[in-house]
Length: 340
Ligand code: ATP
Ligand code: MG
Ligand code: FE
Image (cartoon, rainbow, N blue to C red; front, side, top):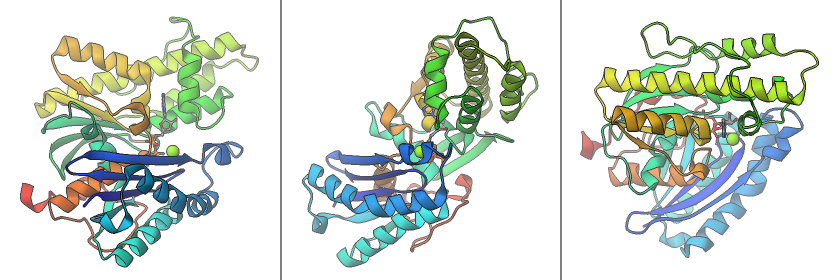
C-alpha cells in the first residue's frame, strides 16, 4: 500500500503520500516562517508546539488529496533525525500512534538521505552512481552515492553550512529570516565587480568547505551607512563567491570519485545562480545534472514518503523501532538488504 511520510525536523510541518505504482499522490506543507521571523531564527519550543497544532490537519489533507483511506496505507515514514529533538518527537509520536493503530510498519527516515533522494521524484530520475551536493540550512556535504544507503562522505563544511552562511550574511545586510532567498533576490540588483570575495579553500587540494570567513568579509566591507545599491552589490559578490566555490568543488569531487552524474539537493539547491553555474559546467564538462523541483529543495514530506517507500520495499528500516536523534551521520546508514 501507499506510504505516508511525515516531516517535522525543523520549521516546516508536512505530510505526503507516495505509492510504488502511481508515484507521488499528494504533498501538503505548512511553513512556520512567519512565526519565527520576528525572532530572527527558529525558536525550537515554538516549532514543536506549532507542529502539534498543524500535523493532524496536514495528514488528513494529504489523504484526501491522494484519495487514500488511512486503512489502505502500507506504512508510516517519519523523519527521525537529524533535527530539533522536540520537533522530531512530534512527528515520531504521531507516526508511531498511527502505525500501531493501523497495524502497519513504522519507518524512521534520515532527513539528509531524504534530501538526497528528492531528485528521484523527478523525470528523468538520476541513475546510480552519482555525486550528491547536499546544501541546506544545517549541512554542506559532497557524497558519493553508489546506491541506496551506500553513502561515502567526500567533504563537508568545517564551520557554517552554506544555508547558514546565506542566512547570517542576509541578517548583516538587514534582510528578514530566513535570509537565503531574500539575499538571492537582492543580488539580482547587484552590480558585478564592485566587490570581490575569496573562494574559500579552492586554492588547495581537498573537498572540505569553509564559509564563516565569507560572512566576516561581507561585514568588513559593509559601510555603516550602506545604501541599497551597496547592499545589493555585496549580496551579489557573496552569492558569486559561494556558488563559484560549490561549483569548483563539485567538479573536483566528480574527478576524485570518478562519477558522471551530479544531483543537488537541500534548500540552497533552489538558488538560481548555483543552478545556472552548475548547468554551464555540466554542458562544458560533460556531466549530467539533476535537481529536485524548487518546492522539494527545502524541507518537505514528499522526500520522506519516497525514502520510506524505498526502505520498506527493500526491507530495511534504519533503527527499526520508534526513535529520534538530533545527530545522525549519513555515512552510518547501511544499504537495504536486497541491494547489498
Ligand atoms: P537541514 O536539512 O540541514 O537540517 P534545513 O532543513 O533547515 O537544514 P533546508 O530546508 O533544506 O534546510 O534549506 C533551508 C536553507 O536554504 C535556508 O538556510 C535558506 O536560507 C536556504 N535557501 C532557500 N532558498 C534559497 C535560495 N534561493 N538561495 C540561497 N539559499 C536558499
Ligand atoms: Mg525550514
Ligand atoms: Fe532539511
